[in-house]
Image 1 (cartoon, one colour):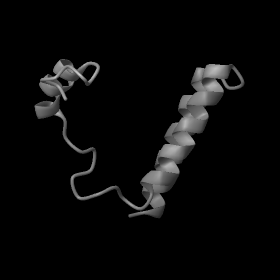
Image 2 (cartoon, one colour):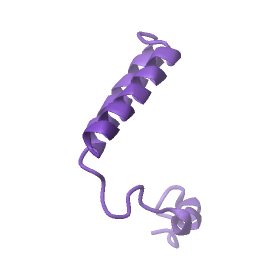
Image 3 (spheres, one colour):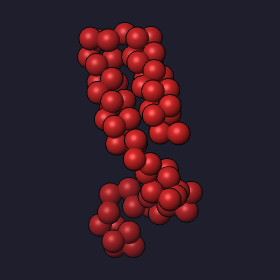
Length: 72
C-alpha cells in the first residue's frame, strides 16, 4: 500500500515503525485499563474546563498511587 501510495502518510509511518515499541512488552498489567480509563476521563474534564489542570493532575497522581498500593 505504501509503494502504491494508497496509504495516507505511509512514508512517515514506515519511517516511524522501527522506533515503535509496545508500552508493556509482557502485556498490560491488570490495573492498566482502569488507570487508562480514569486518565482519559480526567483529561476530558480538564479539556472541557469542568476540572482545573492542577486538580486533574492531582487526581491522576492519586489514582496512580492508589493502584500501585493495591497491586504490589
